[in-house]
Structure formats: C-alpha cells, structure tokens
Length: 72
Image 1 (spheres, rainbow, N blue to C red):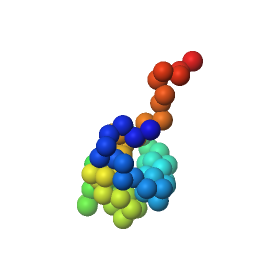
Image 2 (spheres, rainbow, N blue to C red):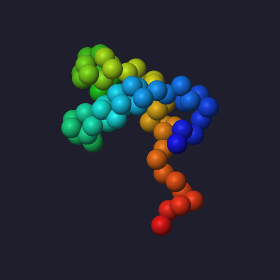
Image 3 (cartoon, rainbow, N blue to C red):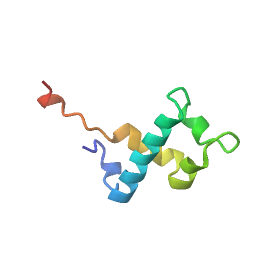
C-alpha cells in the first residue's frame, strides 16, 4: 500500500528496480549506510545507475506491505 499521494506515480518497472536494489543492499551488508551506497567516491554504481537516492528513500519511506488492522 502506498501511504502518500506523492507516491502514486510508482510504476511496476520502478518497483522492480527498488526491490532489486533492496536485495543488492542486503548483499553488501546491513552496516552499509544508504548514503555510502550512493556516494560518488565510495558508492556502488548499480545504485545510482538505477535510481536516484532521493527517489529510493521516498519509496522506502512510503511503501508499506503491513496491514495493521488484519495482523494476527
């Protein structure tokens, strides 16, 4: 569920890229801060080549798969 009107323009291609970057982020270790992954000096090119840092963090902030009323 997208929780903000600004995120309604998320399309399937962008969602797939986001999920792939989340997997890549996991491969590089949970201790790598997001701004280091996007750093021009130390960053990993796959991140900046696929999605801007601002867009990635916006999707990360507003995308939720949690349905609180139906938790068990």
